Image (cartoon, rainbow, N blue to C red):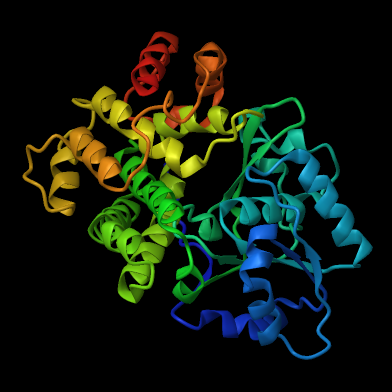
Length: 377
């Protein structure tokens, strides 16, 4: 039986950032650690956040979030949390900052090592309600991590593992489309395709959760309809609002599980070099997985097609490829700079990834070898 859980406190609107002081007070957080990255600092968004806090409010800042969260970054941020005598967290940024803050919320309140809490290693029941309170404020429209129960963190040995449990969901998500207006076109496209992939994969997951499927379809329709507008005109407020909603709705459906796209993108995202953007990886891999899953999802491809305004017999994989091209995204892993020599290790990583279990068609080693070969180009 699949539990149906919705989910956490969400404030969504232009200007939602202004609610931060009240939300921190309601959580009993007086000395938060802000987890962010250098790009967010340079953009001026940290100063905008500080401006809504009362004068004299205690705020420690950790701005060393890497492109993909790492165990080493979790340890450094936990040290900053303890040095500041912090009692909660704010995450400001994309999925990396939010996932890193989740890791800090976990490890500031639970004994080491981090590895023991990985889902694939049986760690879910070890994550208790003691997790530190976290307010998540997304500045990109893609990951849905602000309402997700998972953090993807690369361990020191190179494994990128999922740490997920209901207690990992941020206590509050402040979703302010105003904060996404400055995203450049390429990042808008990549994060937007991340949101679209989340909606597609959770909808196709075989786990039974009709409310989540309805949310996924609506999120897909919003994202598909507005992503070109958001890329073409970053100041289009309606398009930005709809893309952030698409991202949020994709995150709300994570409880259904993802699938082979994420089983493949997770180990690729753990590579030291080249550093690969998660949303771009999902966009590149999605067509191959859609072709692989065809015939194993009942009438769901027809329902996907209807949701995005295509004929029911449309080739969904081909439509995704056209959308990627329209957005200026790469057409293959090779084009992204992935060395062909890493693919055997990526196959093993995909087989071990927690998302593999909820793909609608069971995928074995030979299947992933073929999928990686197709996506490689």
